[in-house]
Length: 86
Image (cartoon, rainbow, N blue to C red; front, side, top):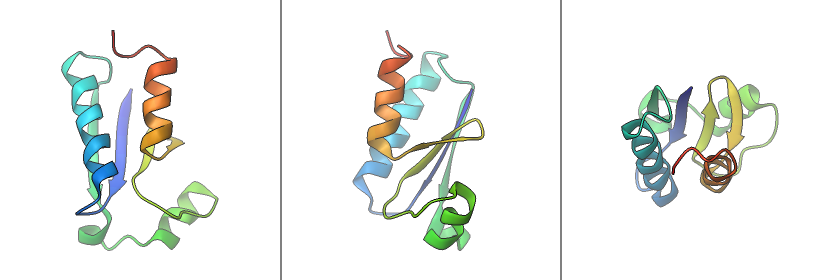
């Protein structure tokens, strides 16, 4: 399982999502993660909307493998529901 986080600088939820992904990686609950700085990469919210298929109001936007999970809250909920952290 691989996690991709699309975020931006100064976003506290992006930082929290990264920390959670790092924690999951440290206990081998995921194979790895990638953080994509949308500002540095020139990715707009409109670009994310095309990929996701629905409006994007906030970041982070998180994918597990190729599946869009949502923001930090949904990612955290996914981790809890699937008991990825003991």
